[in-house]
Structures are given as C-alpha cells and as structure tokens.
Image 1: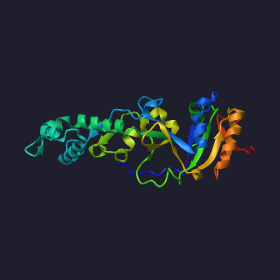
Image 2 (image 1 turned 60 degrees about the horizontal axis):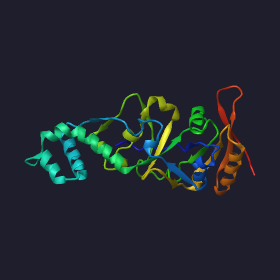
Image 3 (image 1 turned 90 degrees about the vertical axis):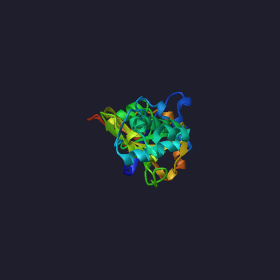
Image 4 (image 1 turned 30 degrees about the vertical axis):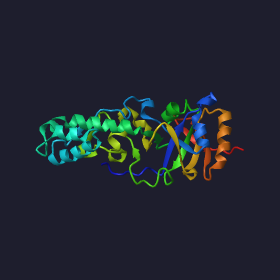
Length: 269
C-alpha cells in the first residue's frame, strides 16, 4: 500500500466556459458549491485509469495464500472456486499458474464495479497549457482551494493522491490487489504517461462518479478569470462569490515580455 502523501496547501481546478449557456456546468457547480467527479471513460486520455499492469511477488506462498483468500471472498461461486484451486486443503498448481491472470481480472472487475468518479486538480494557477487545454482557450476560470478544509481534509484514507508520470506501465504487488479503492491507490488510478507531466495533477475520488459533490465554502479562497473570459461570465462569477466567506477574485494578465500569464486582483460590483 502506498504511503499517504498530503496535498499542498493550495490546489487549483481549471474550468471551461462556452458561449452556449447549456454547456456551462462549471458555473452551476460553482453556484451550488460543488465539485464534479467524472467517470474515467469520459477522459480525453484513453489510457487514464485503464492501463495494463504487471503483478509482482506472486510466487511466494504467503502472498499466494493472502491473494487466494481475497479472490475467494469475491468469487461468485465459492465452492467451485475451492474445488478448482485447492487440493488436499492446499492451494494447487492450477491456482499458481493462473494467479496473475486472475489477479488482473479481479482488480479490473473491482474498478468497473465501483464506478469511481475522479475530480482533477493542479498545483499552479498560471500554467499556460492548462489554461489553453482546460478552460476553452483562456475563456474559462480557475478555482483555488485551501486543502485544510473538506473534502481535502481530514485524510483518513488515500482518496487524494498525487499523479505519477511514467514511460512504462506500473506494477502491483500482490498485497495491492484490492477490495476497495484505498487498497490500491497510486498505480492504477494515478499513473499517467510522462507526456502529461506538465499538469502536476492531484486527484480526488468519490463513488459513484458522473455527479457533483459538495465542498466546504471555506475551502474556496480564490477565483482566477481567464485572459479571454467574456464580460458576461466575468460579472456572473463575481455575483456568485458573495456567498463565499473568504474568496478573492483575480483576472489573468498576459505578460508583455515573457510567455507567461499572471493574476491581478480585481473588484467588481
């Protein structure tokens, strides 16, 4: 099991806005003080939460016994499972031969069964690529969250994790084969291709996915408006912020000398 890594004091969520008001779910969520948790199948990366992986440490007797107990627990026909994979009260060679295949199948079944939702965050508010890719070309906004408030804290299980970037698929220890999400955090749900490393992503999980969940209004400390945001959206967001006790409003400015954007605090009636 991976070690708990606390998130940074601030995390940022980039949100798109469109001319068609029916598409602006991000405004509805902000108004209702909620975060959207997407199902992984809707992600723009087909590898995300849907990667192959290797099972290591599967040849040790103690690991096989532990895995046998967990697979037996989720087997639809426990008697048939015992009959097939036990001989004279001991795990037989057939189980050893098929352990990796079964472990992978069981893990993917648990993932599919849980129907997890994922909400994604970044470590910075001034990433030009993030503004370009996730706010409809700087027309949207970015939310700043203080991670000392719910739903980021308290962290009793690893439902907030830092994404790892790699050129290779990850490996799982037999001990990571799950019955639930906290038992297998980083490798399956938090490993992405190295080409995504510019995102500096953190993830939060909820079940079921495909819906919104409330956050503590004290958690929201800043809203950053995109460089190309429409005036109508700018004033609409400003009106919403009166319901939040400690939020500041900023507008991103374009640098005159560097490939950068930077925030400037603004005050709107």
